Length: 582
Image (tube, rainbow, N blue to C red; front, top):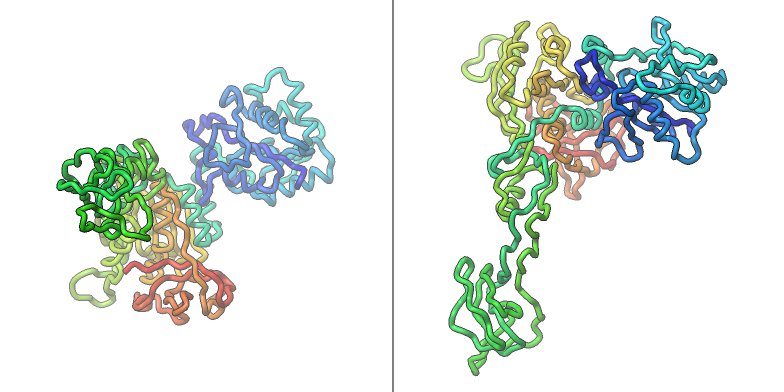
């Protein structure tokens, strides 16, 4: 594989799909471009042909066919051109289009094996019907160059114009492309049915990369706590705005001793008149220092002598307790980057920098939807009913995660209830749905998502509890977080995913995960990752609960965090922990 390059075609007009950016369409939790890049991840060099995509890592080459949308042959020619300047050109080149959501690295490897064994100029994949797919192939580099040279122009030519005589076709699965909206919908349904459950980290990564972000808006910074800066925040004024005293003491001129004037400089008061050499003026912290000030000497470093002069005490350090204009930042300096969350600290910094309005995404507005005929929030319980024990606490958990709750509703188990909820979701950014995520007779959420043609980002989790979790995005924009109905599973999964959902919707820079050694990891580990309540031990280690009841939240009483226990973890292994909101 060390002698193979790859050209990924990620442009085109997508005329049968209304001109959308087809490679960016998400199927099964990843974009079709991501699927293509994963399929050729082992290649020496990869060039993506199409519009520039700033999110791609720098090691991936990017170029554009000329003119844009000039067809696959022009795109292949552009890709060859981008590789021309590379040292040690590869003998083989993988060429594939970024519109096959189920293409795998194993399929590409199989093509490479056939190319090596056959010695042919090109090896192409064939679909289930035996049709050759000329945009899924491995070319001998010299043969591809020769085929391009014999064309007068590569613009608007079909791939058949390049196909050499000496070719081999190999029937492969996963090479069906998506050319129409119906193709995409069928692919999403297929992906949902056969999707491999994602680990918590994989699900978070998918949400941060693939969920559609909220629109940018301008708002008063103090009103958007929980939002994320969409642009860097520059200072509108210097800090300090003028030279000020950093301590209570004396502004002095010259080396001393000093004659003390009768006037005093107060913070917010009139600036004292300028100092002459040998003069001092009493000054308070934050006061504007007068012209001629050589330094500010704090009270504890000086004394008034019997001669009426101010003297520096012996053996005191020589310091200048003046904060100079712009010492912290100058006008135009970036005081917070794009992607920074709007926290209490950022609101304070904005006030100090005289910034009043900022460009933000968010904050995320959530509607909580509790499901199930058996759930009752208020009033006496009837036969077969149970108390809603988590609906009342979910707003607090969301608030602690930077998400606003606009309301909480209860949904009966009816066939079309979710359709109505989805249709009325235009006033929120996120639907947090508790229950109805499994495959039971009353679990209607997944069917409703299919009817709504929602983009399913996370179909299931490889996590206990929480495996039935589903995350999707409706065509109208709002995201859907479907949580298990079990109280502990719902809360633990919410805390595990809500940060990534918020980051994906608002473009926030992810915060690093907390980690600590898990003292009894081996006792807790199993074949799949687990998320368990834990307390902090005396040495900062985590001690997880071995016995866990999931039908209530009693296991969270007196606990400090949720510990994410990897499969087959060993004692003392550092693991992620999620602090529990108080």
